[in-house]
Amino acid sequence: MTKRVSADKVTLLPVWEEVPHLFSDQYRAALAWAEEVTRVSETHASDVAYAAAAAAFEPKDLVDLTIAIAAMNAFNRLGAPFRLPVKAQP
Image (cartoon, rainbow, N blue to C red; front, side, top):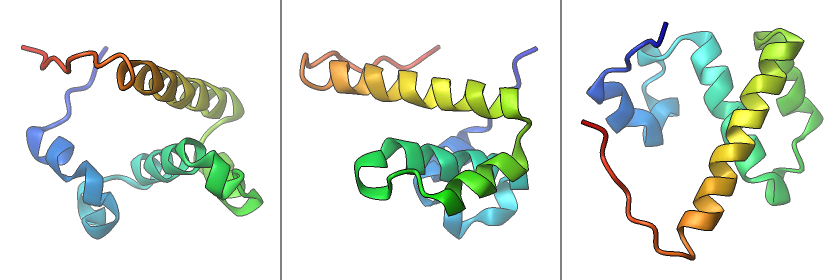
């Protein structure tokens, strides 16, 4: 079953660290890991960040999350240079 996320949460994703009360501990761990993996050329996926993510997720879930993050990064790296339009979902 797909869980819907409120528009307020989506709007506040860029500042998720400033509104921790809106996101669960696991959700914040996922967002932190996503930033770490997305900026891997800067962060090198630090041991500290990995330990925090591994503490929040079962091994398979962390693999699945990391694959999803990598896929989104790949889509963004293809979409931007090819000027693919962003489409809102109805």
